[in-house]
Amino acid sequence: MMQVFYKKNELTAFIEKIKSQHKIIGFVPTMGALHVGHLSLIEYSQKSCDITIASIFVNPTQFNDQNDLKNYPRNLAQDFEKLAQLNCDVVFAPSVEEMYPEKDIRVFTFDGIDSLMEGAHRPGHFNGVAQIVSKLFELVQPDKAFFGQKDFQQVAIIKKMVEKMKLPIEIIACPIIRESDGLAMSSRNVLLLPQHRALAPLIHKTLLLAVEKAQTLPLEKLKTWVVEQINSSEYLKVEYFDIVDENRLTSLKSLQHGKKQVGCIAVWAGNVRLIDNIVFNL
Image (cartoon, rainbow, N blue to C red; front, side, top):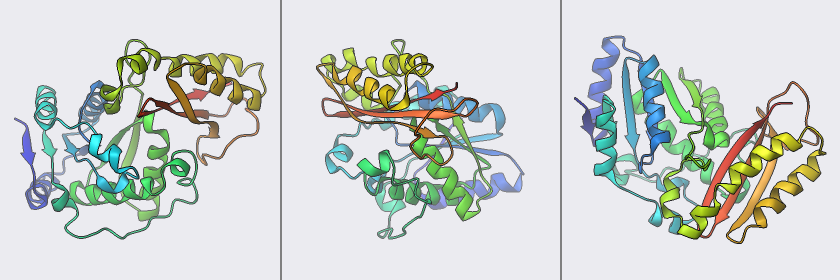
């Protein structure tokens, strides 16, 4: 039966007991509004760990837009139900006061990968992510933590944080889960107006075509083509599109054979910001 903890001391007592039994702990941190993508992370954890713990916490320090924080979808009862159906072992659902009894003034360094793409457009976002994930890692003490590949840059940031803090945690990136029409699953999708939702699949469709065109089109022309394709839609506007080195996240001047390169995109669909990515393997 799934256990729910709201307080840090309750979770800590449980973790101490599990650690004494030498069980492998898998951890899936979420901000709730759970969809099939989140639930797939729970299933990945269950396959390789003895105990699976999920957290649900809408973290205020990673929102640079207060309207985004205010409008972020929340449905705790529904989330609990979905996790219980999957036989998740533990859910940790703290309040803001529980996680931040005082202001967190820590500043993290990520060797520059936090200043690109998402970081350039959402100042302070990744520092907020590191604040909460480091707090959760300290509490849960997982052996493995599971994240969705949709948040490609976030996964790289968390891997860098784990490396710098010398934490004994394996960070596992799991495949993007998509709607039947190709739109990457996101908690924010429920906020899309019908006209925006109808056109949002164009993002993934364009990325797929870009992989094909990469065989013959120079990189800069390819990037321009992707932006123009999506912007030609009445209800979509590209914020950025870049093709980057998988590890350093630096913008590439040309595509190389035999290397993993990732095309990352952020698109505004009305007032909702959608992100996606695709691997370019030549």
